[in-house]
Image 1 (spheres, rainbow, N blue to C red):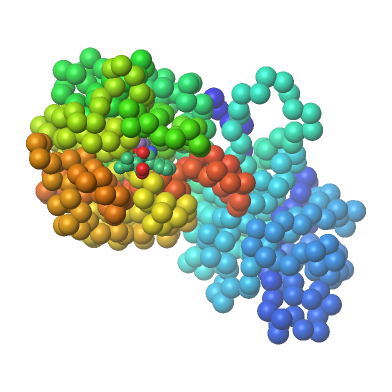
Image 2: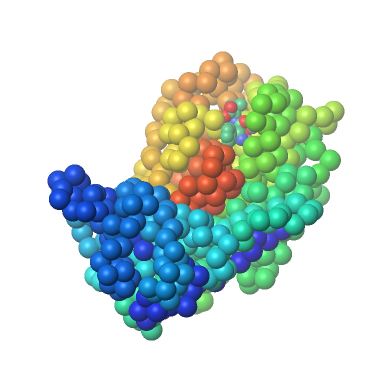
Length: 522
Ligand code: BES
Ligand code: MN
Ligand code: ZN
């Protein structure tokens, strides 16, 4: 299931003369003080729109204001140009108050580009003339605009059997107006944005795929096929290989389903051995989470088709890594299982021998993510990782603590700070959380090495229990970070900015950024 493609290119000719279906410009909201006395009220054109404003004889701001434009973030106002410029439509996208620096923050631009391209569905070819700084911040701003445009232009192909009358197709070609289209740095940003946004779109496709179409064998095959095409090393462990390898956690969760579990390993080998460091990425691939014997309520259960968003992000990030070729070795581990209630399911009370050899007492089969991840993490450590980033839709507690937009990060404190910084740089916010001793204490088991959840079924510090449990499977000399994306992995509301409804692709951009960070700085 692949979504329609969007192409991206740079132009440095006058936006007023571009033969496209629509031109996007930015508008700022002014403070009442700034706006007083101006006929346009509180609206201010952003840089990049100069030649278009000139073609409108100075009446552009006033006209947009008459149409209701306020410059608020995410606002999109369309205006027919009636021959004033070559393009038939000008689209003004709100950027919020005028920034103090040279240009708006990258995330503001990313969201604006996304909102504009999304609103322009139906127009095959559009150009973005948004404010870009001409200083050292230029590459980050261009990257943001390019990513936002490609992600706002995403639409899941879906399963409708009949053509939808009046359905507007996503924008096919996006041009970005820059000072110099031949500039090598700018061109490199376009290439990078295509790789990264392409990966985000692939991960959205996987998350949005119906769970009956993406059970572990099919998911493994889809990831393996994409990875082979990208030139990555691919190894798929089927149920027989998992059994002989002793992957008790993955097998326990997978045993309740007729669709058997998998562990997909993807390997990127840098030219010349890279910088000698090894990064491991591990992602939770529960293709559907019913809760198992500890079954979930029916309400909203269908959203648990997104419980493989971590594995989708890791698989997709590996595709971007293959394209970007950073100078560091990267291996992806994607444990996959379907958590079902049946006569063969694992049950509360079971004691499972994990891949690491540790014995875990199962108390709630709905805490299945940590069971499969523990095996993935142990295998990654055994293979010799220096840095291990693991991401998963692990706990409802993450959503309670940090909401639907901010991921929770637990692990080696220094690495958690790097994840937070990567999240800031990419527009995927993440916040460090502690791993308290008393939470670990509550997971002491009467019979096994550790309980899978708090032995008294106490939900206090729910998200932290997940982190504390997974820490048990990380080898001591490995720097690790656990990124809980239960909230930000899936967007159930209406589309906003460059987020479409459904899979978000979080945290693909963070993972790629972290890999590049380790490649550059060790
Ligand atoms: N996949 C869920 C977590 C989840 C919840 C993801 C909401 C996305 C949105 C996970 O497997 C789960 O069921 N967690 C339980 C753990 C509990 C049984 C210890 C939870 O969060 O309630
Ligand atoms: Mn669960
Ligand atoms: Zn789950």
